[in-house]
Amino acid sequence: MIVGGGIVGVSTALFLAQKGVPVVLCEKGTLGEEQSGRNWGWVRKMGRDPREVPLMKHAMDLWGRMQQMVGADVGFRVRGITYFVNEEPDLVRYEAWMKEVAQFGLDTRWVSKAEINSFVPGATRQFGGGLHTASDGFAEPHIATKLIGRGAARLGARIIEGCAVRGFETEGGRVSEVVTEKGRIKCKHVVLAGGIWSSLFARSVDVKMPQLKMLSQVMRTRPISGGPQGCGSGPGFGFRERLDGGYNVGMRSAHPVDIVPDSFRYLKDYVPALKNEWRAMKFRIGRRTFQEVGMEKGWRLDQRSPFEKYRIMRPEPGHSILDQATVNIKKLFPQFRDMVVNERMSAWIDVSPDAIPVISPVEAIPGFYISTGYSGHGFGIAPAAGQLMAEMITGETPVVDPTPFRHSRFIDGSKIVHWPIGF
Image (cartoon, helix red, strand yellow):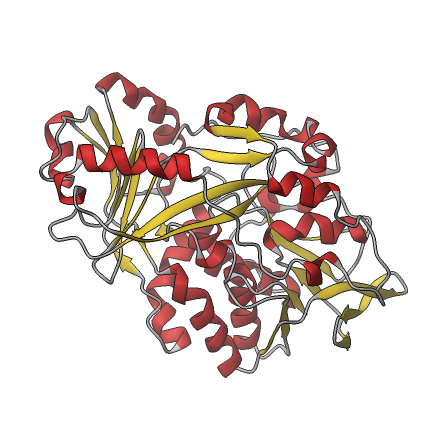
């Protein structure tokens, strides 16, 4: 049983179904309607926490085969990703990361001040240089999750939308069945892939899963002629080429963060992250604050749960951030001066204390697994995360060492290490 129909959940279902494992996926709303379908769409190795790189390298291989695996084009294209800096001395922020990931043989390379503007012809300013990874790319979030889910269903997975999972029962300490709003389903394993809902679900079964939420926002434009290829970001802007000829446009490293009860519950866990990333956080008292203050902390399995009350979270974007991103990108790139925005999208990102995911069994409850906390990196890494989780459940040799992603790191006294990437 998989709880959650985002891209991580459907990818897990796909690989379990490929192995002939009977699998049911329940989604309280519809597939991919939260962060999985409303993100920037980047599929990247560059800028990853070094602990994620081996899994992401494998994910890139899987994206390349995804059309064959699911029988449909999910929009994956290798077009390159570029990070821009304003001044040459700013490149120093990437030196530690470049040194650390040298062991993985990435094709990420330094781009000089003389070369950098070739990636954005016509730019109105001279950038100071940057990084470029030619083998990175993107896919289309608005279709990828649904198509991967359909691929899993063709292989035998049962996908049930509009069906919230309220919790699960155990027998002899092991998972024995889940309780949904539509009835009970016998099972031996439960994979919690609930995105921003995972911490609340885990707490309802007395499992600590520290997780906070950041708001991500992006604009979708109409087709633009002569724009840059691939994806890029720099101080005050970010863009991603779309297959429809338009672009996703936003601002790098600017995220509203609503202060909620979990902000205090998990404050100690997040101190390392706050030290590294506080400049990108826009703390506020927002709508989510009041929602979570009034949200049930526990419920009986025969009662309506918060997952039924809040089917799909469609938060209001940070319009001031997108307004500034619009000003910035029009000023920098002449191709965008007459851009027409069709849609402003926003979604909550599930963020773990060390900004890498949990992909792991929960030792205290045999049969219970968690796959969450992807911290804005989940869309790209999801296929490999799905395969890794499927291998854990079936007892196969994992595709990569899962140790960095173990759930126990948050409860066994391990030091929380947040990599200061500075991207």
